[in-house]
Image (cartoon, rainbow, N blue to C red; front, side):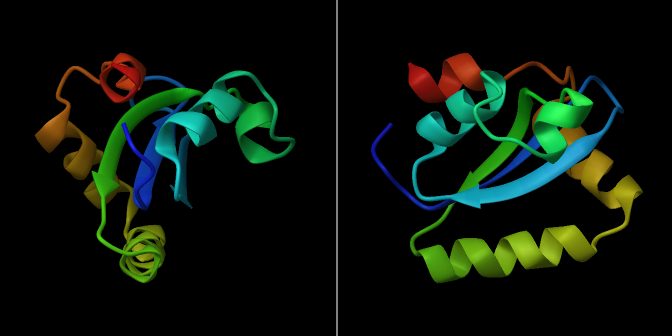
Length: 97
């Protein structure tokens, strides 16, 4: 997957702790989370499973969407994940080919 702005949601498990982030290089960033290269929330709470992502045309669009999603109620975020990934499977293999 070429570099492209993206918004992503990670989960610790189905209906578990959620994390929303934005990046210009989704495979690299998810690899960093999965391998605990990033100190902080995802490392502390074991939030490593990619359950949702959106690709955007610009970083501004991705940042705007990230801010929007962060304001959403938890139930709305869960519905968003369920709509595109009802089994809560880890999408890591999908983004790295």
